Every structure is written in C-alpha cells, then in structure tokens.
Picture 1 (cartoon, rainbow, N blue to C red):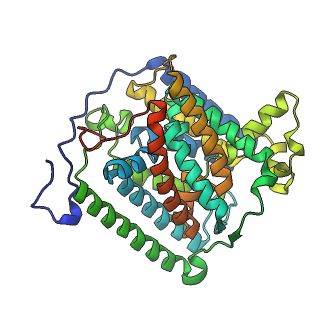
Picture 2 (picture 1 turned 60 degrees about the vertical axis):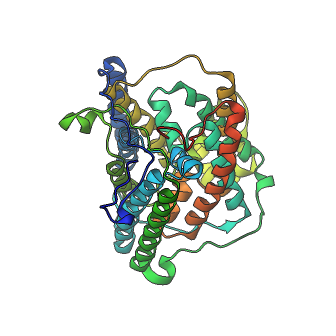
Picture 3 (picture 1 turned 180 degrees about the vertical axis):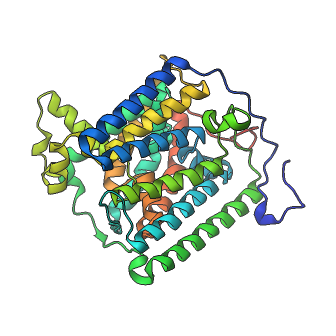
Length: 419
C-alpha cells in the first residue's frame, strides 16, 4: 500500500498500491503536427486580421487551452467517476486547484474592472431551479456514457480519438434538439441566482470560495483514506525540459495553467469561459446550409441568439475558443506521438457515445452551462449555481456509472491495480 504514516493525514493520499511508472512517449507525428500548427497559426492570423484583436486573442487562448488540456490530460468525467466508483479523489482535488486559481485571478479582474480590447467584466449569477438540477444530472449521465465532458470532447477529438467523434455529433444534435423544443424547457420553477460578490464584495467572495474548496480537499482525503482506492493510471511522458512541449504535465501543473487561461478569457472577453453554446450554434448553421430554417425557432428569436446566428462563427467567443481547443490539442497530441485515428468503434460504444452526447447537449442548455460554463465559471465567479451544478452532477455520475456496463463500458473497481 502506498500510504505514508510519516506524513500528516491531510497531506497523504493512500492508495491500494503504487502508481505504475509512466512509459516514454512515442516519436513525434510530424505530418499531423505540421498540419495542426499551420492551421492554428494561419487561422489565428486570419481571424485577428479580419475580425479584430479580441477575436484573434480568444482563438489563441483556445489553442493554449487545448495544449494544456491534452498535456495534463485534465479530466472532469474520469475525476468524478473515480471518486464515486472507488473513492479516489485525486482528480477532484485537481479541480479545486483549478477553481481556486481561476477564482483568485477573476476576483482581481472583477474587483479592479480590468479588461483588454475594450472588454469589461460582466459576471452574473445563474438562476437556481429545476432546470439547473435536471440539466446537471443529465449532463453527468451523458458524460459517463459519452466518455468525455464538454472540454474533454473537444480536446479528445483534436487529439485524434475517433471514439469521441460520435460524442461530439450527439452533443451537437442534443443542443439542436433543445433549441427546437425550447418552449418545452422554459418556465420551469426557479429563483434568481446568488452572487457572493453582491453581498460580501469580491474579496469576501474569494475568501468564502477558497474556504469551501479547502473543505472539498479535506472531504475527498477522508473518503480516500477510508476506501484506499487504486491509484490513477499514468500516461507516457517525455523527460526533462522536453516535457514542457511534449507532455505529460503533472495534473496540478495543468490545473494552474488552465486556471490562468480561464481567467484570461474573462480578461479578454469580459465573460467566463464557456463551451456548449457553440454546439447549438454550429448545429443551427448546418441546418441552414441544407435549406432548413432554425432561425424561426423561438430560441433563436431572442436578440443575442439571433445576432449570433446571423453573424460569422468567428465573432462568437465560444466558437473561437472551442475551435482553438481542437487545434491546440491536435498540436499537443502530435508532438506527444499519440495522434492516431482508429476507424473501428464497437457498436455499443458508438451507441453510448451518441446517446451520451445527446444527453449532454440537452443537459448543458437546460442547466445554462456544462462542466466549464456552469461548474468552473459558476464557482470561480462566486455564483452559488456552480456549486449546485457540481452537486447534482455527482448524483448524475452515480447513475451514469451504473448504466455504463449496459454498453460494455468498464468502471474502476477496488481490486484494480489502476483506476
């Protein structure tokens, strides 16, 4: 057992055995690396020149987010599954570092009113009600079936993981389905959101958020000490200075980098990092290309949504960061030697991916965000709805891991050597 009696309890993370030593990375995949790098640089230049510095900067931030997500293999889906299935809280503790880093920097930005390219911070609380609770649970069930969360879907597709492509397709389809059936999903019972900064100021909000995150760290360590789960698996990694460019990064290092980049999105755009609105937008634009008219649907009649649908995707901030994540992850995966397309997908895996994507698409729109736009953005800005989203997502994860075996998908077990 890899527990240590010399270390204080709250600094130890006992596991049933030691984690395996990471294997060396494979050779660089030159062709995918060159293609992804040229696309990333060329598209950034085009967007910056054609649509302005703000749009160009958001695309560059997306590229950096994709690099960081892949190099650190930063996961939300696996972290919740490992905690619920076997009690390993390593991933969730990494979430607290990400959230704490973002919360600290966002408090600085919002407290001073700082912004770039004319942006000013506009941070609001998400509403709390049945739609939030149901949406978070549906999203969590979907990500356990689909194999990835919102950000994870993007960086996995960029990294050449073909099994996640059906998840992305289902995600877009579910988002479109929500916008088509939008009247059914409106009017659900809810109350106005609660933003801590409105009551205790930005530094009071920051202090409460950090205290709550520390409590999560304590609880996950208590759970892990009682259950002594298998360790988290390792991934191939470069050695020495090359690790910066070829990975894999320590999980906590990735958490800090992602927290900084999440705050940078606020600094550049004035709003928190989001992912899933773009999927609804892309789906609607695809329908227009084949002669359909989603612009007549009620969802696309609101002023902001109508403007987004009528404008090029290069003016939509979520589209810019999403596309950047895909290309950035492609660069990182090719540099790490792991960019490979696998044509064969078992039919049950395919079915789970599509169904999971559809549930995530509906759930994200219903809850007003996903693991990024609701969970990360909510908690890091001091909105109570982010914490409630996370709580109901844990409940959805519990359901999701019990559905996974129906599709031939494995869950971690206490007797495994890794989880």
